[in-house]
Length: 205
Image (cartoon, rainbow, N blue to C red):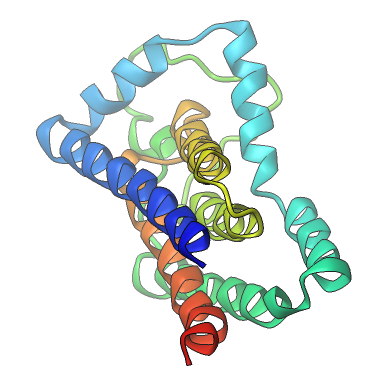
C-alpha cells in the first residue's frame, strides 16, 4: 500500500512540475514568443517522435488498457471508465460550449508572416483550441498505467510520457501551452477523484 501511494505521489509530482512550468511559460511570454521558440526547435526525427506521442492519446491505447484491466485488474475498470467519461464531458463542454471560438495556433497566426514549421501529414485544425483533449486523455490514461505497477520509477516514466503527449500538441502546432495545462488538470483530477473513491477509500476502510 505504501508503494502504491508512492506511485501516486511520484505521478502527482510529475503533474505538478508540468503545470508549474507550463503556466510560468504561458504567463511570462507572448503567444507568439511561446510558439516561436518551440516551433524553432524541430527536426525530422522529432517530427516523427511527437506524432508518435500524440498517437498515444488516441482512443486505441485507452481501449487496449480497458481490455487489459478487464482481464487482469477488474477493480480498475469502473474508475477507469468513469474518469474517462468525466474528463471527456468537461473537455467537450469547455471546447464547444464555453470556448467554441478559441483559435488554434494555425488560425491565430494566419495574418502574421513568419516561417512556421508544419509537420508533413498533420492536419491543421483551426478552432476549439481550449483546452487540449489529447493532453487530458494522456494524463488520465497514464495515471492508470502508473497505478497498475507499484513502482516509483514506473510512475516517473508514465508522467514523462504524459508530458511528452502534452508537448507534442504544441510542437505539432495544434495547441498553445495554456491549453495543455488545463487539459492536464482535467485528465489528472478526474482520474485521481475516482481512484480515491473506488481504490484508496476501500483499502483504507
